[in-house]
Length: 235
Image (cartoon, rainbow, N blue to C red; front, side):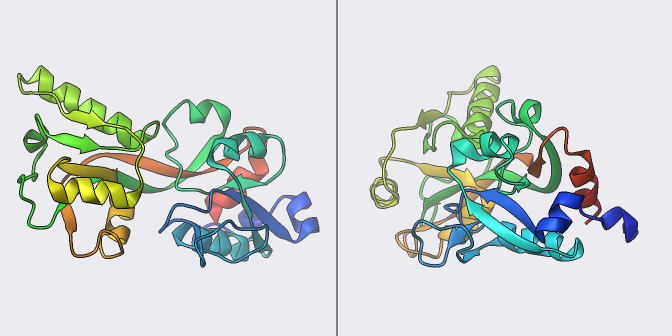
């Protein structure tokens, strides 16, 4: 545990009385809004990251303010000084992010799979993904994990994974899954566990295997904000 001195917030934060966090509030169970719609600064946001942000602020003797921010603008806004920190379920080692900000890692999360109820395609191991069609949202670390798994299968002499990245709504993907036109849906293990019991997934899908490629999730801080990084890491 850090000493009381090591938990001192930077002077600007103490003067403001609050830590301002940029967060893309559309990614349950990490951060979302109660009504599921757009959030305003200071509006109620809920989720694991929101609770962590509040506890960090409490330990630094200030309040926590969530600034809802588009995903693609999170690190840009951080480095422009529009917020003190970013907390948004962000993989710290993906996409050159470590070159844009420093990170305080607080979680490791894997890539996981949703399959149709009863797991009719028997997806339980990495080998079971060979030749299967798997849908993934493009451009994130989950896609990179899936492509790496496919490369490993090909190197072992097995068929590649048929990776599908066409954008569809949740309802459309579930319909494809239930109809057997897609063998699995891929996402973070935490989001899969959150959504599997909620519409439209409830009753027609379940958690399948395997979990792949655990990645560090971190709080982003400006590279020159060393006092902030030390204080938040201690908290």
